[in-house]
Length: 143
Picture 1 (cartoon, rainbow, N blue to C red):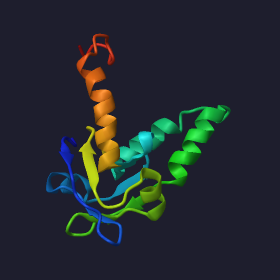
Picture 2: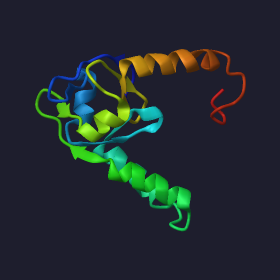
Picture 3: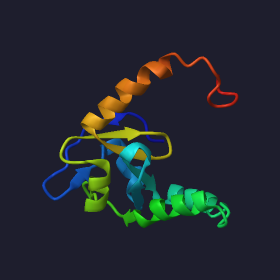
Picture 4: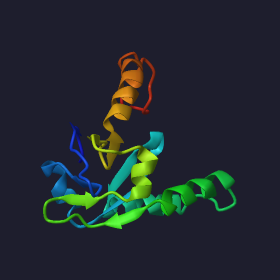
């Protein structure tokens, strides 16, 4: 499970070193793609295979489903981290997420998100109070 927030920096070649506690789960390979709110989403290969299988269930007659699949999969890259846990984030994903140097790598359970640090801080500032004030059931049966 991926938990926590880390602040690595991209090097001049667009490479990022994943936090040590994430590396074992990613060593066999991963998929990076566009995420919601303009971040890069990183899935361990096995988790992405599960997600893809769920996506295959979407009706091809649905324009929304086709659009979503096209954007998600056309931006996807499969990668194996090097021995230091380092990956190169493709330029199209760096552009999509506005990644330059300072990054926030956040664990979101079954996946990781890579954000521009300023964008992550702005997002968190905007949504943290709503989280604290949540009084309705967001996830059925959780609270």
